[in-house]
Every structure is written in structure tokens, then in C-alpha cells.
Image 1 (cartoon, rainbow, N blue to C red):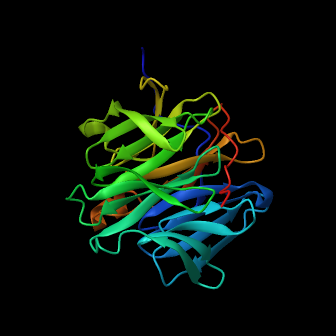
Image 2: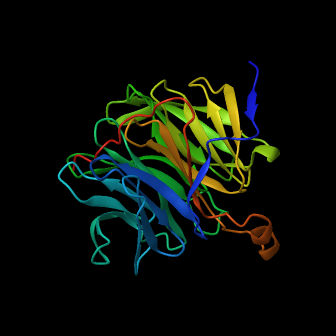
Length: 296
């Protein structure tokens, strides 16, 4: 299959020029018409309104590594040791379940909600050396299941439109995995795509309404569109090197919002790429899926 490379995204906008150290986890909140995103390292939450282009940030006293919205209202997310109810207006959280206190060099990382309202999230070795990370799922009944292990950095849980396939990355190993979701378990783990050096490292993922994956590449300056079979369909080159995550949003779910990072960049790199860390968006000509809400 021929790879189409868009070397210039004509509709690309920098919505918020901000030097985020580790911008991550964009979350489209439909009833607010706003995109929320995190700076994990700086312990911040950012909100950009697409209604009036207003911007707001919250400084936290704790590490918030992923964020989701509940069907009952309010936020839920992952902090260093596990799942928690999040109240960033009051700089507070309430643990649902602490899972990895016995692994002090681990922390939780990326997370996403599936079609059925389960919240999936993974952990990682903060030194990025040991395969001590695991994948967990918080169910609608409040119970947490341990579903997979042997990750150095977990990233990008995403789900097929029918909810039957899980996509999940190990960033350091440069592998995108696919799994079959079978009730409350996963099976048939397989390598969907293996990145090479020029492509960087697989970070955040999202899936569009056609079932194709949108893969953000850390140190790869690109977003790669993959088929459900792992075929490269398009490569969108970005003006900054560290592309961390993306999600569809906007009134018609036709805008791709993209987070980036300055993490591991030298002073010279930051001068060369002054927009690194900013929030970007463009309309790729396809639509995404509505944001799934946590049922718990």
C-alpha cells in the first residue's frame, strides 16, 4: 500500500502556545465544548474552550497522569499509584484503589475509557528501564482487574468502534499491540505495528469513526494513520519533535487535538522548535468517536 505523506498540514493551528514539559492526555468534554489536557511533570491541568477560545490552568500538588469524565459528573483519573476521583478545582483527589505502592519506581501513565464505560490505564517504570509496568481496568462495578504486564512504558489505550479490539503501546519497545476483548478479559495479544528509528516512539493513540488508528510519535515529529490491520495509510508531519497524544473533538467531532512536549529537549532544541509543548489542532477530513464516559 502506498504511503501518503502530508509534509505540510495547511489547516494546522497552534491553539495554545505554551511550553508544556510533558503535555498529555487530551480529553474532549462535549457538554462544555472544551478540550482538557495535562502536563504530568509540572502537575498542571489545562482547559481550552472551543466556544470562546478561553484558556484556564490549574496547578496541582499531585501527579495527575490521565483524566476521564464520569457519566455521573465530575472527573476520574490516575495518580501515581492508581485510580482516583479528581477534584482539581480544590487541588484534591480521593483514591479508588491504590495498586502499585510496592513499586516505588513505578507510576501510572496513560488511560482511556472504552465503549462500555470501563477505564483502562497502565503503569510504567519512571526510569524507563525495567519492564515493571502493567495494564489495569477499572470496571463499572468499581473493581480493578490486572490484565497484562511486562511493559516499560504503557501508552495509548484505544478501542475499535465496536469495542472488540484494544490497542496499546509499549513506548520504549516501540511496539503497538492489538488484543481481542473477550468480556472482562483480553486475549490474542499480537504486534500490530513495530516502529523504526525515524518514526520515533509510539505514544498516545486515538481511533476514528472508520476504525483507523492515529498514532502520535514521541521524537518522531509525526502522526501516523494506521489501518486496523497495521498498514500505514498516511503520515502527517508536525512542526515539533515530541508528539504525545491526540483525540477527536469539536462540534462535529472532525477536529484532531494534539498535545506535545518539551521533555528531554536541550536548550538548543527548544530554540529550534519554539512551539514545542503547545496544543495543536487540524481537520484531517474524517470524524472521531464520541468521548466515552466512565460508568463507575
